[in-house]
Length: 107
Image (cartoon, rainbow, N blue to C red; front, top):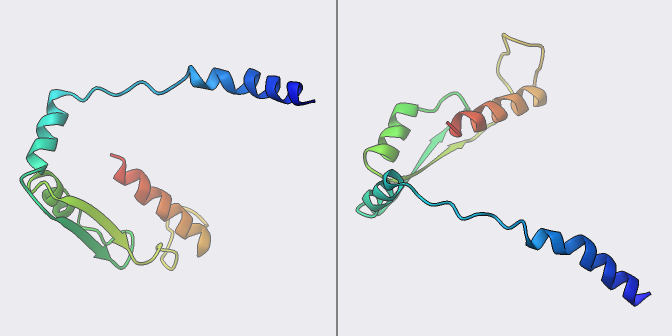
């Protein structure tokens, strides 16, 4: 029984060892940007009441020009607002707005 268990783990877990992640080699631009961020010591937290209250120009200014670590905090999910493009309300609307906000941050 022990031999079967050992063979099972060996047969199914060994292939995962060979599929390790390939290290990402940073480009010259990535290195240059990281070095410029070393000259600024600080972080910026932008706090807003609703998901659509953010000031993207200010956040991008602190991130790209000042080279600060930036973060955005929305105090609500935006589930109490109006929905002009669909029928979702309350919790469902909050989920949609949260996903929209996360997708916008990936750009």
